[in-house]
Image 1 (cartoon, protein in one colour):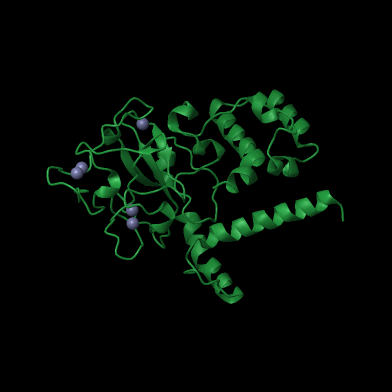
Image 2 (spheres, rainbow, N blue to C red):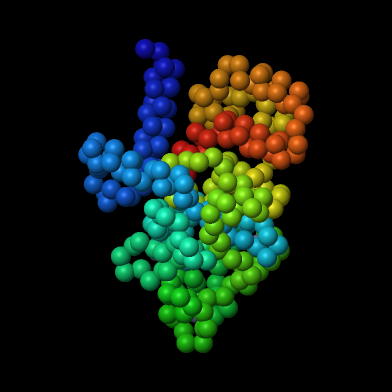
Length: 278
Ligand SMILES: [Zn+2]
Ligand SMILES: [Zn+2]
Ligand SMILES: [Zn+2]
Ligand SMILES: [Zn+2]
Ligand SMILES: [Zn+2]
């Protein structure tokens, strides 16, 4: 067996394991499901998950989604999004939708995003960090008595203060009604607001208010080079690049179609790459 085919088998194994891991998350409670339990789990959970996905984003008063929350994104309560209740057999009727934390003893009643200032945590106007505040409703400070609840004046890249932003939880229909991207239906747990490669960038980097992003045709159609990540190289089909170039130059589409097309194309090139990074 050549070195190359060994590498490709390894990549597929990696993607397969990642796929299984993303489906189950920590729903198996740390103990691996038996094959029967796993089949039963997939039969029960996956249809509901595909239908009832919740999209979580941190929205500026300008309407831009400055942060699209993914499975590993931290909550005010210090737990990750995937540790919150993200699977719903039926979509909640009440608005706003609450996404409570599932960690035992955690008072968090719904996922709440807190931005970072670069790599530094932001401070409340009482000078204490988010983690020094309680995750119970009102977010009172545990370290002083003058604080009336966590309030950060940190200025987001969109130009608005953090406190003016809102953590938004919404359904696929609610997003579609606003023209926000929903990505493809995926069986993975706790995908939150992630809808494709571009959703990993910050809102202002995506340079539009939808979060869908629109990488240039040159970027999408550039041949995969030795500079690219090995995952991209391993999955680059020999003829996909040239056929897609033909599509780009010949298809006359509305702008919306273009965006969807670019997003899909971008995902094809990058999905294995980003998924292994999450
Ligand atoms: Zn929590
Ligand atoms: Zn929480
Ligand atoms: Zn405070
Ligand atoms: Zn304080
Ligand atoms: Zn912002």
